[in-house]
Length: 69
Image (cartoon, rainbow, N blue to C red):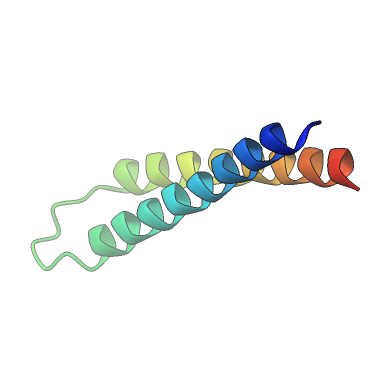
């Protein structure tokens, strides 16, 4: 993998981390909502997205590390 491709790849990984952080904040806000306008389905769906995003980010990091070192 050339240097430009590596840089693009690591930027994508950082964006994944930002998305994970945003999803976690949404989940936290949903649970702490005083109006209790969330459902367990909403929480389940958010957790499912988080798990998938984290799994994909882990895979991407491993791929980046293996190609870089």
